Length: 171
Image 1 (spheres, rainbow, N blue to C red):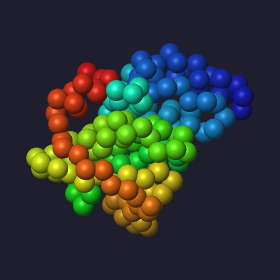
Image 2 (image 1 turned 180 degrees about the vertical axis):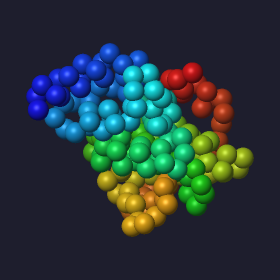
Image 3 (image 1 turned 90 degrees about the horizontal axis):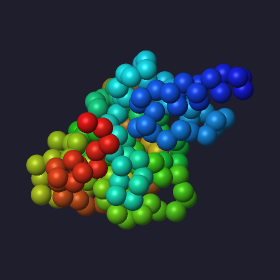
């Protein structure tokens, strides 16, 4: 197993897509989750990548199936998970595993991305719910992208395409 983990870490470091996400610590299972997200070297991730102005990674699902992949395979249980309330949209993961509340600026930017990548994009103000990923569950037999969350809080944001462009890490 240690040889496999070392080989996987070397492959991730050599892959062009590895720049999009920080190299996970070996042994915690996140290396395998990150590797499953790539079909082959150079293949696109099942999520868009952004970087907050505070330097935190933000991942945004590309569709229903990639929302499931992002939420249940790529994200860590302690990451912050966001979604526009009561509307179809992308699952958003703010890579923040610290037990404290994430920095307000980074949380606001991740919430803005959740609003921008939802059907509420044209609204003046969008409520975005957030919780830790470990409080997000998929109902049995539910369609891809359908989830239930517990212990959520809400952030109100104004969708802004200019901020979305500034936070992008991919072209």
